[in-house]
Amino acid sequence: MKIAIRHNAAKPSAAAMRKRLCERVAALGLKLCEGDGADVVVSLGGDGTLLRTVHEFPDTPVLGLNLGGLGYLASVGRRDFGRAFGLLASRRYTISKRTMLEARVGGRVAATALNDIVVAREASGHTISLDLTADGKPVTRYLADGLIIATPTGSTAYSLAAGGPVIMPDSGCVVVTPSNPHALGARPLVVRDSVRLSVAARPRTAGNVDATVGVFADGEHVCAMSPGEAVQIVKSRRTAKLVELEGYDQYGVLARKLGWSGSIMR
Image (tube, rainbow, N blue to C red; front, side, top):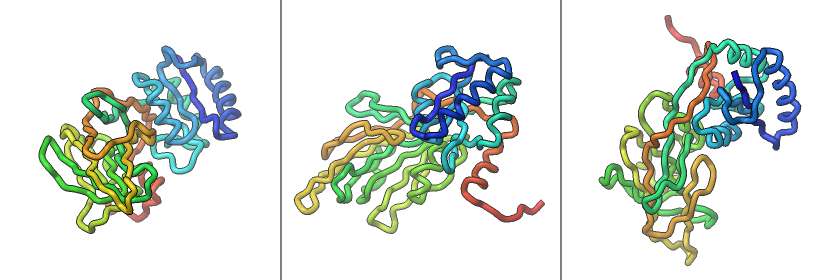
C-alpha cells in the first residue's frame, strides 16, 4: 500500500511530525511515495491543508490528521495518529464520497469546491445587492455582505459561522446562507443538490464607491464580477474522496467539535 503525506509547512511542528509519521509508515511495511500512484494521501495540518490536498489529488482518497484547532474534516487528533496508520495498513477504513460544487462564469467552469462557493464584497466595505435564482426561477434579492453556497461537508465551515444549519454528508442538498443580511427575513435556504443556482451582482453604489463583488471557492479568489454578471453554481460530476477510519462516528465528531452535551434517553 502506497502512502503520501502532505503537511502544512506554515506550522512549525508539522515537519517534525511528518518525519515521525514517515518512520511509522516504514515500520508498518507501507510504502511512502510523493503522491503519484498513492492509495491514500495523508493531510497533516488543519481543514485548510486538507482542502488543498483534495484539490491537488482530486481522484485519491485523503485522510486528515489534525494539527490545528477545531478540525471538522481533519478530525483525527494527535493521540490517534499512530492508530490511524495501523488502520490504514490493515485497510480498516471506508471511502466517503463527498459532493463538490462547480462555479461557472461566462459558460466555463471557473472553479470547483468541496466546502463552498462564496459571492461576497471584496474590499469596498459596503454591502452588495445579489439576485438569487434556482432552476431559472427568481428566489429573492439579498442586500448583504455576501452569499455562501455550501455543500453538506462545508455546512460546518463559513456557512455555520454565518448562522447556517449543520447538514450531514449524505443529505443530498446544499445550503444558501446570507452573510450579514440587511433584512430579518433573510434566512438560510436548503435545496436539493440537483438545483442549478445562479447569483447575479446588481448595480449598486454607496457613497459614490462601487462595491466590488468577488467569487471565492474554498476560500480562494476565483474572479471579480461586474454589475449584471452572474455566477452559476451546480453540483460537480467530481466527488471528493475522504477516508473514514474504522469506528468513525460523524455525530460524535460534531458533538466533540461543537461542544454539544446532554444525555440521550434510551
